[in-house]
Amino acid sequence: MMDYEKIIHSLIDPIIEEPDSVLIRLNEESDKDLSILIAAEKDDTARLIGRRGIIANSIREIISVAGKSENIHVHVKFESFDEEIKED
Image (tube, rainbow, N blue to C red):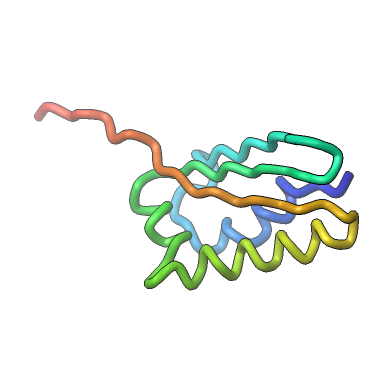
């Protein structure tokens, strides 16, 4: 199988501020279905989604094309980590 995690990192690392804190989880639902969860800090998640979801849709499209080369339908979901409560 293609290295989807590497592809995603090459797409999103230039966009976000904290690439080391990104969590990418792959979940093979079947031989033909793959779900990918991309979790990042709140501000980075906002950057990845973009205005009206333009960036998120572009990322989904690129990953979908990669999946089609292997006859796999890929679902990409974005989430943000819960912010820690900081007391000063």
